[in-house]
Image (cartoon, rainbow, N blue to C red):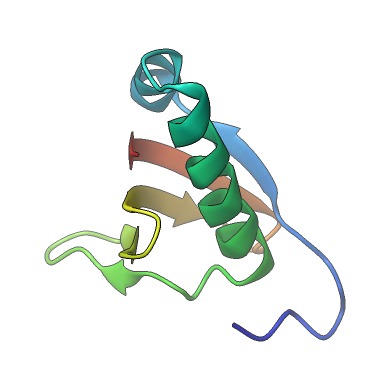
Length: 85
């Protein structure tokens, strides 16, 4: 993963379903998810497009984390819609 040359990271916001899922994670799951969210905030092009939607789906096979998200037009905010860890 190569970081954005500008050094900027997108702000990450979680919508209600993701917040609910977050409360059910263990400390280990939260730690693994945090690493994935940092990676997405630095490089929002990591995910692959969910067919029929505008939502990228990022899966980190090593950490066992999946995040479905949306990036705003100016790429300053990443909105997380779904998480698995």
